[in-house]
Length: 281
Image (tube, rainbow, N blue to C red; front, top):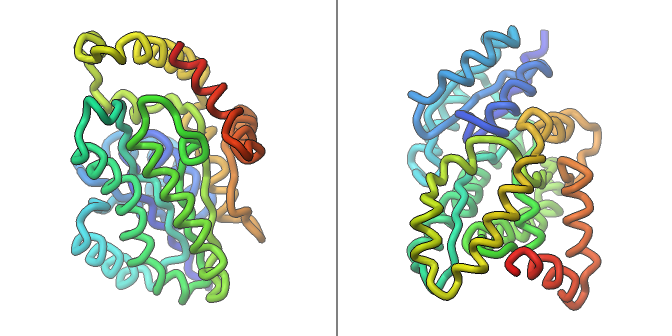
């Protein structure tokens, strides 16, 4: 008998990560569902039980900003299961603010989770993925293609992820590892709620940026009112795991495809500036 393929997914306590873990387990994969705080695994374990896949979902602690913890987690997974066939980089953290009113440390913190965390986990996983001729799938964002107002740190990290993975992909392919970036748009998940924004306080402290921030927040509330569900956004992740030849880049909705297409065809940047400029006026 052939052992089930094993996938490790980061950031599975809620949202896309949770939905991806259920989706991969349903597809027959042994799913190592990792999260920084395993005390928050209740929603995932309940969803796995309801889907009838509890026996294929294994929760492990993994903080993507802890290099020693990353190595220990991966070594334990391979020791127990004998293989690692795929990595799904999903863990991330949103950040809202503009640089004059924030700090460089705020930007560094966003980069640590959203970019360097991806780099660190990918680096540690690659020897095992080479052995399995496996796959790296990274949940990026349309914010990795289109810079968005008051998302400077977050979009910078997601742009960095896109550049890193686009550069890695042809190199990894020479050793049998496929690389895919999945780009969601607005997703109705706890990702945004976890920001814990005090909007009145944020606006009160915004100073000269107050009118622009108020316009941006109003537009954002509207966009999330029509957001995808996490389950819908997770479908392309499972598809990329199982496709014979996965694409390098895939968006999770028609809206996301249209949005990313704006920047891919925008040689002088004027189309994106006109679009995002309308969000703050």
